[in-house]
Amino acid sequence: MEPFTIGVLAFLVIFGAALFGMFVKNRLPEHHLTPDSRDAIKLATAIIGTLSALALGLLIASAKRSFDDAGAELRATAARILLLDGALAHYGPETAEMRQSLRRLVEHRKLEIDSGTLNAASLNDELDLERIQDRLRDLIPKTDGQRWLQSRALQLTGQVAETRWSRPETEAGGFPSVFIVFIVFWLALLFVSFGLLAPANATVTVFLLVSAISVAGALVLIIDMDHPYLGYIRVSDAPLRLVLERLGKP
Image (cartoon, rainbow, N blue to C red; front, top):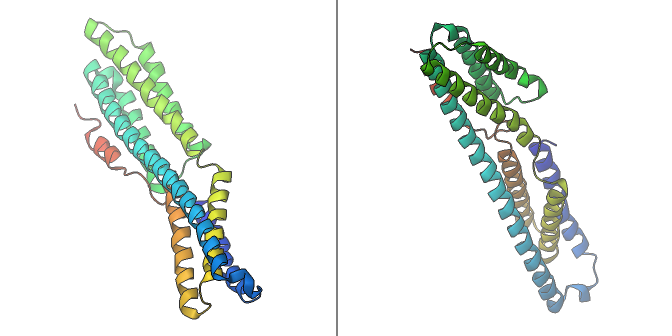
């Protein structure tokens, strides 16, 4: 499910819970909202609030780790591609076509990041890297230097391919749905208590509305950050732009 859709559903549930609390407040017997009852509700909501804060903290830490790992992976891939291009350049003119294929692969990956598209079809450019590997294996080195460069280039292509294939697996994951459901449920319970204990007036309603929007927006940002190649918050394509500037140079 898209992060924005989850955010909208979370907002409806959370703010709806607050309105439900206001609705029920005026219909409960008076002894249900005595000072002792209010204290018990506050204690219960304090526990729920602590659980919600811990769960949101875990989500933020996980999303930040995914985002940082994606950025590190992209920088590492860019460095390996530059090293691969350098190895091919030093090997000799026989690798000119491979270097052109490598450039097309980088351009395609940059386009993926810019457009936020990642699916099975987008992995077709991986075949270009496999062709580069096949051509590298078909090369017949004439010197020890070329033999070392061939081995080094094959190693680098293997590393780039491994990273390339692991990326869609990461994007296909995400937070467990049950975890998100429980967080929204806990937040809804908190807002029910706000509606029960707060006076029913326009000021309180507006503040509860803004709070619900803020909480739902935070969920959207956290879930979106967990998909650093597909969401609104994406890793920078600066490493690939720098690579494209240097690819093909002798």
